[in-house]
Length: 376
Image (cartoon, rainbow, N blue to C red; front, side, top):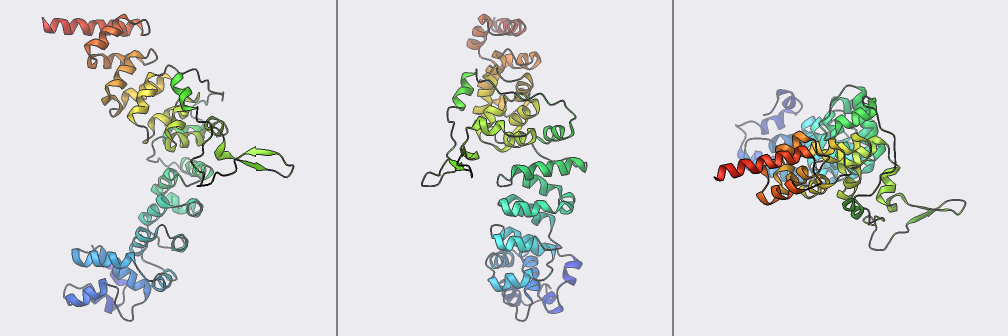
């Protein structure tokens, strides 16, 4: 729907193009960007309005035109103050054009939705530019979320954004926002840092790939830097995963747990700080096979197992349910809740196992008795 305010920004000849009484051919020519005498900024708004209009044919044509605007039209439009709707369409089509994005970020009427798109697709440099305008970020908290979840944005920048949100009383829709906020405000006591132990075979396997070479190009990069004294140090990205993690702050670990690789999550889910471990389990990237590995480990905390047990997506897996019942660290209320879902053969093994708690064994035997009574 076209707002009167938007129409008022167009000169009368362009307003007539949008009128239902305008000749179809005139409207089609306008959708193709052929509007003699129109200023670039006015043409851009006209195309945006046509692209969002109810006429499907005109909308498709205008969208196509917007996606391929000539450089002179774009540069001319960006020297003027653009309408919010126009900035949104530019963000949709040119978010990967670094030079145009930097010009677009200087627009005083840049829409919140446009800024979200730019934040979501930003590289490191553009992410920094977006993050510097705190007033805009506070007006559009969704932009903070998009920047935080953008892997190209620096860890230090993500830390600053979470701190900004917490200081201003914002609640963000992020998988581990509560944990990150608690780490910043000190609402929870942060456990002392310690080196994780790798006594769990499943997690030993994760750490066997000590050097991360995913970032290397076709030719292997030099893995070391040399300082002025001639001393060599391993570049950050070539450090073993556990060494990289050891150098991070709590909030940086939380973000890595949320956005990192499966190997990183497998380490962070065992972090001695419960905020970090919880963030790893809450990561939207964690998959069922990871949940199965974690639920079988006796080296993770009860809180981690509780979070897995409460996740309906994970507990659809039979293996996860079996692991939770078998793991003596699973809180009793959650372990016993899974017992009725187990197969007879697994119930029998658990009833004889010395690795489960007595309370769980009792629940298993009661379930076996109920099944036997139901069959007789």
